[in-house]
Amino acid sequence: MASVNGKDSSATLAFMELAIQQAKLAMESLEVPVGCVIVEDGKVVASGRNRTTETRNATRHAEMEAIDVLLEQLQKLGLSEAEVAEKFSGFDFYVTCEPCIMCAMALSILGIREVYYGCANDKFGGCGSILSIHSSGSEHLSSDDTSKGKGFKCTGGIMASEAISLLRSFYEQGNPNGLHANV
Figure 1 (cartoon, rainbow, N blue to C red):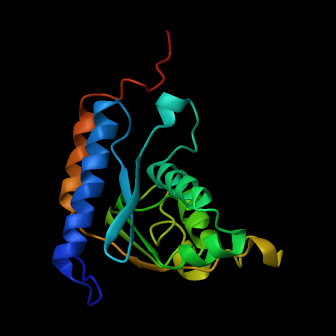
Figure 2 (cartoon, one colour):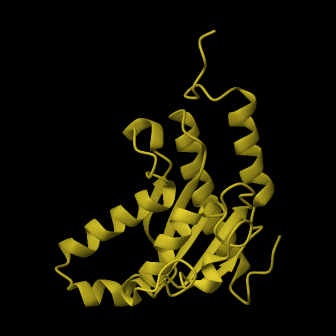
């Protein structure tokens, strides 16, 4: 397991286990098994799982689902846009698979504090596997200051074998939602 940078490793494992449970829910719904929980001050404040097939929307990754749940809660509190932005700097994300480039960019723009993830994402990873959005923000993508990401801390390899096992199980059974050519 990767170092958790002085954080209570038992709490880190407990939060990652909750993300794994979300990934299992995704798999039960015939989605790629990736799950996410958002934590503030040691408490889970939102969770999400992949829902790309269910929603027929390729952007509905676990992180995006969890962000939407959290934003809905924050809107109900009547917080201003500035207050919401400030709150995001206190959130930690626990995700079973390294956030893709799209999700890493969204997390960077939101200004979240830290991401803990299970396995690497060798095809689309935005936290070091393909791009390092977490450490560079979006400097290389835009000159528009309003869209610059803030970057965030990132720790990978937490319960990676469990995350990999779920992904293997899903793909070994054959992706029931994958496209098949009619020949």
